[in-house]
Image (cartoon, rainbow, N blue to C red; front, side, top):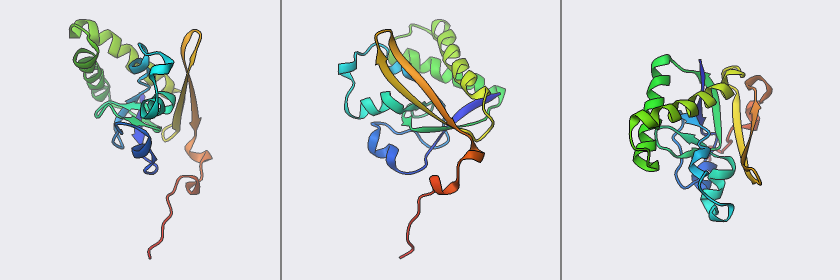
Length: 158
């Protein structure tokens, strides 16, 4: 089974997102966070999260990139419970019985995105408002297509 983990390639996420995901967190699209908002309500760092941020499932912060990797069944079941608890705590779900199926659907959606890619594929998301609601687009860079120089942060020892 495949899923996504947040990746930190440089320090830019700390400058553009209100809450930054920690590298290595399991991650989902997290578009539900914006579903009750209008376009004019999303500005500043929240707009950056809307436009291109994945949601980490530990910090509930955002990350620009995620990487596809294998997830164990126990971990998969655990992140469904984590997300369901978040729905209760912060989004008004009345109980686990109602929150669990919605959380499972979110987790299954992320799994479906990841399943078509080999491990170590980088994924990016972009969102926009349309007349029909929020539209998401997903892009990927396969590990063997990327050169290290494209992502490495170079510095001086002096």
